[in-house]
Amino acid sequence: MPSIVGPIKINSVDGGVINFGDSFYLSPKSTSKTSSGSGSFNTGDFLNTNNGVSSTNPLDPDVNDQNVSANA
Image 1 (cartoon, helix red, strand yellow):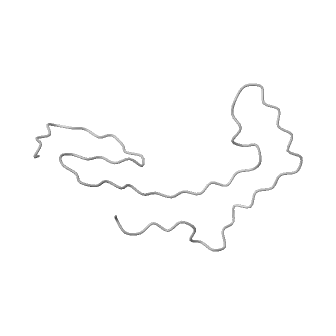
Image 2 (image 1 turned 30 degrees about the horizontal axis):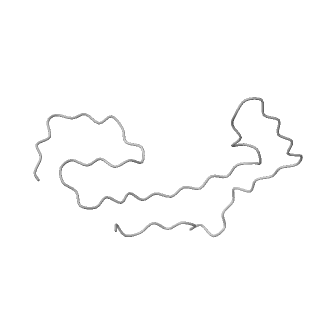
Image 3 (image 1 turned 90 degrees about the vertical axis):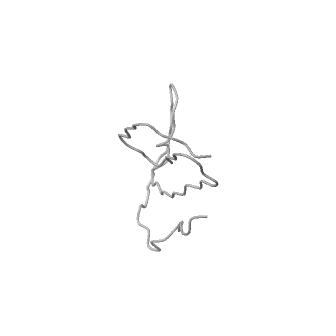
């Protein structure tokens, strides 16, 4: 069903979908890669993390990991 949209203001969109009016199928796609050392994503109160020696290698020789193609 058609819709009438009044004045809008969008300051920013970070990885989301904006839709006005009718839509049959929305399928947003994204990929990301994060490199971090051991114990870096721990959250909470009074953490005690003993990691010893930790090493993270952010180099990626194969370049393509998660390819996103097509729209449906």
